[in-house]
Length: 79
Image (cartoon, rainbow, N blue to C red; front, side, top):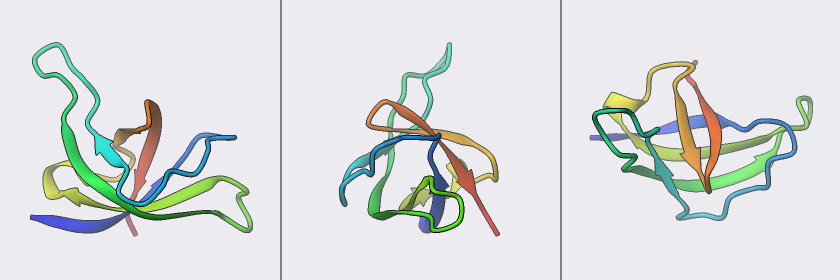
């Protein structure tokens, strides 16, 4: 049901702690809901942006999708 997924933060976003909930973006028809948990986070050596790994539900793993961590928008990056 869930798979380890790479997430990239906007510039200057703080690193989330392990077990921080990942939430979907609220829409007109659905409120934001928990879709996974952060497992680890670090600052990328080349990008100097925060990156995180999280187990996300499959339906929220499309590349370049947007999710919320601590109220900030993060981008799903699949390779």
